[in-house]
Amino acid sequence: MVAVVELSSGPGTTAAYARAALSLVPGFTRSGNALPDVEVRRRGVTVDRAHLAAYDRVCGFRLTDTLPATYPHVLAFPLAMRLMTAPDFPLPLIGLVHVTNRITVHRPIPAGAALDLSVRATDLRDHPRGRQFDIVATAALDGAEVWRGLSTYLRLGPPPSAGTPANASPSPEADSTRSGSAWEVPARVGTDYAAISGDRNPIHTSLLGARLFGFRRPIAHGMWTKAHALAALEGRLPEAYTVDVTFKKPLLLPASATFTATPATDGWSFTVASRHPHLTGLITTHD
Image (cartoon, rainbow, N blue to C red; front, side):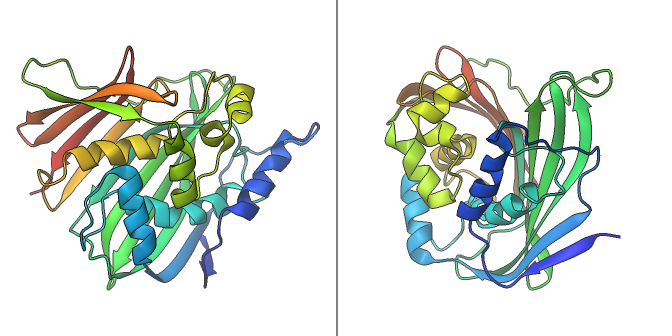
């Protein structure tokens, strides 16, 4: 039976990162081969308009009365942090790699809506490069689901058993009909997005933190890159759709990159790339 943890207020992320930092203490280990059968919920979450406006500015969205598709991910992120830093979670938060993200928008969400959020972890499985699992987040309005997010995280290392093929991910092929735009991404994007999203992983905000994990410079948040790509398509997206992305090579800050998008029969395919692809995505329209 799923245990439900009902929160009456936002848990924040500062304490969660403090708990996550314990995994860096020599001798600290996590164990177990099962994800906790827990769902974290928070009801009646309303949007702070000033926070939404700041998020829109950082990610490049226009100011409107409808939530960007990626914004509920930010609302649900503290709940996911609460879940992933709990003592019974089998994998340490520090070092997890966000490899794919799928968002489904069932209908536009008014910025003034009161949303019921839920988050749970599912499907811990082997991967050729370690172990991975999914965080499933939902947002409901008046009892009906209006948004769903699925984030897949990878813990690098030897899997406990023989590796299995990785799940297929959207990877659009090159197409001469694509249109593109140049991105100049300033270094402050890492700290600006961390401040607005609560995702304060030091690989995005600190030169030292980035180098501890093998990066020459801080890297852009994957969800910022996804949001900025959707902002580039604003006004051309349907009311209901699913957007899948795969995070490829990290985008080192500051960065120059090219965004390209190609119309498809049922949506769009898009990429963010420089010398290497950083993100590939596919938007599928719902009937």
